[in-house]
Length: 512
Figure 1 (cartoon, rainbow, N blue to C red):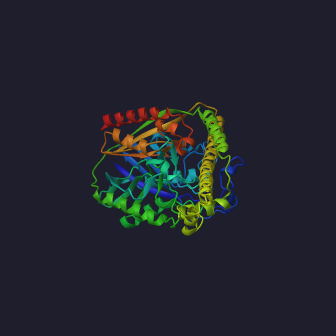
Figure 2 (tube, rainbow, N blue to C red):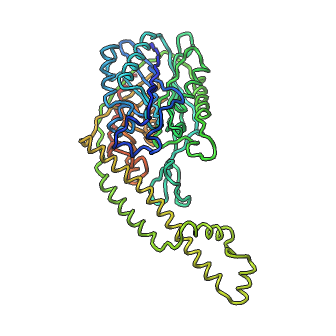
Figure 3 (cartoon, helix red, strand yellow):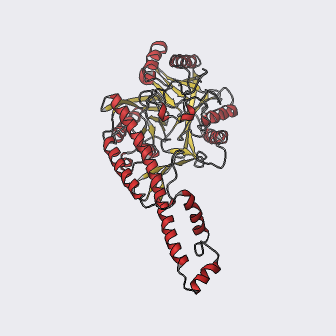
């Protein structure tokens, strides 16, 4: 097998507001303070191409520092940097200009997503992608490959809380935390850092492809253009290994995963520290891998994912719950000004909240029930205020859900179809297999794919060759978490995907 690498910078270098491309329909979904924010760059964005050639078969793996591929209509231009027709136009040009068949082109988005404009314009993106592939082809040379992995469980957590009432609650920066006593469990993460190593025949490294599931939210608060922590991790790996080695980040099952520092309000969100730690994990796996001659195979399965039909019913149920929650706040006798001092008094000294102990004891000696009666009334008022406060928090969460669901229904109506065409690929290099998915895959799905694989090393590449928002397992839909709310696909998508993956594994197994 031969391989070659190349890269092009794709950062937006224009002047103006970061949100200037957004439509009037999209603007309300972007924080108002960002509408007029100027484009600023923290670090550059790259498109990296890895061309692989095994006899007559030639494929290309492209890793892009962007949020999603072909996502303009699907997100109502909220994620508008990659045009809807990016993939078909790129495949058409690469077939005509580089002799690469359409199914041999794989494009992965890192999912970096500070709000606003990120990339150069549509034409430049295509030209630079084609140029990077051509440059990589011109540098093809014999390679040996190997794969391995390490576990890194200190960097991420699953942001979905399983609640005692049978629902899911997603920890996000715009949501208040639910009461601790209502939380039952936390869903798992996939801690595997999967690494593919490609060495030249003299043993020097040509490329490192690493796969890890995370959400790239550490760099978001600045709202500046950034590749986030994969930019740091890749640069660190390339610096340590030298030899013009190129590092490629492939997004894993990051749909319901967040970075551990993301919601930390007491310490800075250090994407450099996070990136260096991830880069060191990549290097740890890299050093254990032994390379050898290996074959290349690729299988592409065309699938049809059904779209949701239940959104109106879900919205109706949420609105009924809103009415019930609002009604539950009746007879709230306190406002915040009167609640807070009472709450503190009864928390600091439950036995003698309103005065010193001697006053309570004297009242008891003289048969004065005043403090006892007042305490009873105050405690009921404080309890009622807390109940109303929690109802308010739930109302706020439900309003966010309703707005999101209505936007998803708008998108489905604009698409005007009941199902969408999609692609799932299986790429095998020796004993390593990548399974691609054109959506944000959740941890449970990735773990299921890996458990079903007949190959020693199997990695899931989400946000690849397209974008259909979140794809939660079918069993998650009744639980109503954020990934279910922000979802276009009907729960039947999972069975379609499972069949495609099983077919891919069987075809790749027969070809070994």
